[in-house]
Amino acid sequence: MTRQQHRTQIIQACLEQQQQLAATAKQEMDSAQQQSNDYGANVDRYDAYRTKMMRARDMYAKQLANANAGIRVLQGLLNHSPFDKADHGAIVITDRQRFFLSIGAGKFLVPFRSPESQPQEVFFAISAQTPIYMALKGKSVGDTITFNGVTQTIIEIL
Image 1 (cartoon, one colour):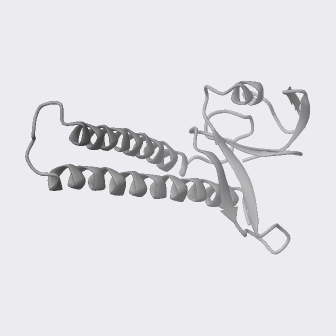
Image 2 (cartoon, rainbow, N blue to C red):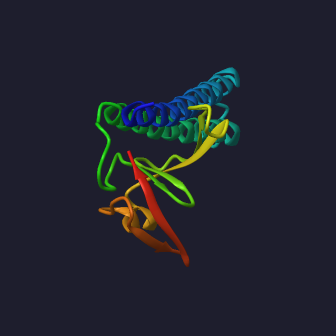
């Protein structure tokens, strides 16, 4: 598997997770709206149940907007070629962890990629606002970072 194919597979796994989050948020948002509609006409302007449903709908709408924004960023990164230095869009593999410097999506699993690898690989999608991102930014293969008292050596950048 080429570096570009490996990179695409990792980004695709993160993208699928974001799409699943967006679908769940959309479903919950629609459900909260439907429950509010089914409740009937406003009894008074301080209707606690309707207010609760509208707050839930608004919360899920924000989650949907965030997931859609993440999807757009990830789709834009699909066409990038592999990186030589750790920067936004790079996939950084250390001797301890695997990072995708992109959006704050957290932990995601990449399915089986070759006969020699594990059935699933764990990656962490981290945003530019995180301290570990700042520690990794600009580093190259062979560089080491120390974060929270743990030293890690960069073994591959995609």
